[in-house]
Image (cartoon, rainbow, N blue to C red; front, side, top):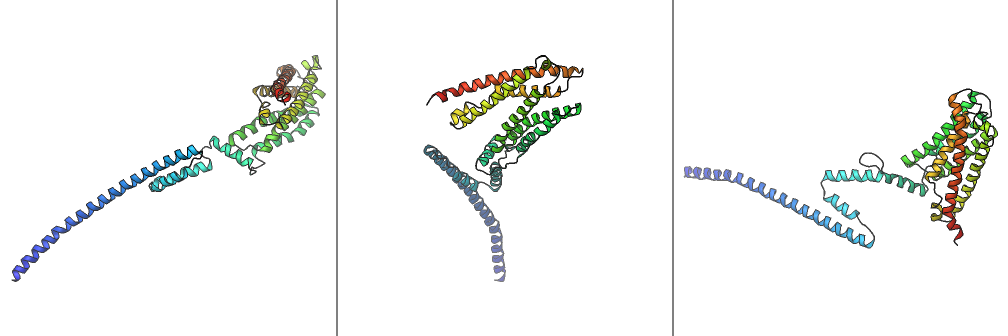
Length: 321
């Protein structure tokens, strides 16, 4: 009997040991099937959410409102952790106004201007400081021009050239970095007109003693008078246009002709400043003493023509009630 019991117990143990691997395999297969079903269900849910988001987006577009937040939130919730991290990083870059390459896109300038419109802009930006420095240099230019000696002529000419360079630099920085302000937009043309008007008065008061100024003494005063009168009339015209609406204001916007006129005008004044005490036999200064008055006269004619173009474009708004 004991031997029978031993034989039966051995058979039971063998059967139990044989059943254990089968149970483990069955358990693993069931878990694998459950994981596959869960993945398929997750994909089906994600597709349903995406389809629902497209439908809601199309309906919102028809109604005039586009709703994307719900769809993006659902997609991020159903996405893996790594995808969610990348999506959050991309959204944070877009909110900060920085693109994938680390550069600020063109929309950042629009946001900067909207911040300026909301009253949160910074007044003393780099372009504004450059414009203020250009205005502050005017007394030093006058002081150097009224003194005798080649050193003072060099100082006066250098200050004027730097002022012209900052006129280009502040606009470039403002456009590149989106740091333009309302105060800077007001001060930039005022600084240009102040500098040009003061230099025109100086070269009229004491013109170079050689070149065309010696042969035609009235050439520089005539050109200076035309330019100053045009600037006064143009300022009054733009002031009236600003108070008459955006359509009228767009008719007197700066065009390429005005830019060419300004370039010739600033170049001619620099040439005249360099020849303030004569040429001294220098071939370069002799050429500048002839080129300066010619450029100034051409810029005066271009100023007159550009004013007529602006006035023609705004005349229809003046005569119509």
